Image 1: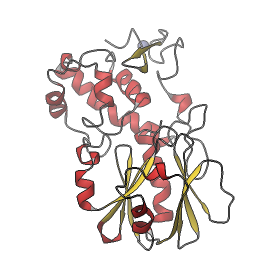
Image 2 (image 1 turned 135 degrees about the vertical axis):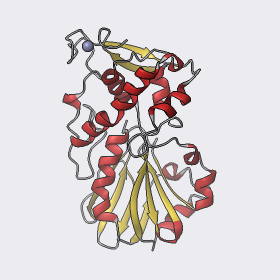
Image 3 (image 1 turned 180 degrees about the vertical axis):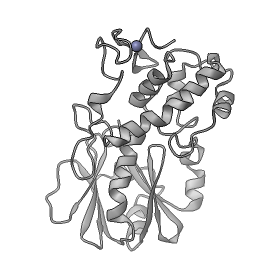
Image 4 (image 1 turned 30 degrees about the vertical axis):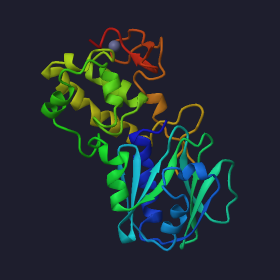
Amino acid sequence: VPELPEVETTRRALADGLEGAKVRSVVVKRDRMVRRQARPGDFAQRLVGRMVESVGRTGKFLMTQLSEDLTWVTHLGMSGRLRLVPSPEPQEPHTNIVVTMGSGIDLRFIDPRTFGFMAVFTPQELENSSLARLGPDALDHLPTARSLQQRLANRTAPIKALLLDQNLVAGLGNIYADEVLHRAQVRPDRQGGSLDAGEVKALRSAVRPVLNAGLRWGGTSLDDLAYLLPDGSAGQYLDRLKVYGREDEPCRRCGTPIRRAMLRGRSTHWCPSCQK
Ligand SMILES: [Zn+2]
């Protein structure tokens, strides 16, 4: 599942090709991919002829600013990815949306499971959507330790589940939440409200280094290669993960075998020695 580093890697790769370009035509092959649009026909109609002003991001959402105050929102869902290719290039399977730019380049949304979506929202629609409730971005607007501690106070849910709550902090998913908790040396099943000030500080300090490490390597492409960069290459962070996907392998800090268990339905990895 693409998380902040994968979406930010995608954003950076798209910005050069899209910013300043005009949308020439749009083809939606699966209506399900524009299901968040109140009237599905609005999607293509609002995009065509608009100029891309900037490609932005909040959490796991790409937020592309268009002319006339429209916001083009993209969520990659479970298995979605974007490609930027010359229009004549053959389309691969599961290419569900094609946005052709005036420059002769296609932005293609490939999503076998169709959990992802695209929509073009007016400012009012954006304000009324669930996106308005997203928490601060984990990379660009990480809350202070004090603010984080206030948000965690009295929370009985496991800290791992709270890190996955996009309304608390936006951008962390299953892989990077495990990595952050390992770096902070906090057990994933601790109740959020039980963390003391020092632990919250350690947790807060762990977020950006982990996300930046993922970014440096172009994100994490798992063995299924569901996530790839817009040029079709794979992210290289998988082999550098500290705990995720490393059950029974030695902790890179202390050598203790990494444990894995299901926590609230999510596969969770941690070091039983390092993490308290
Ligand atoms: Zn360890």
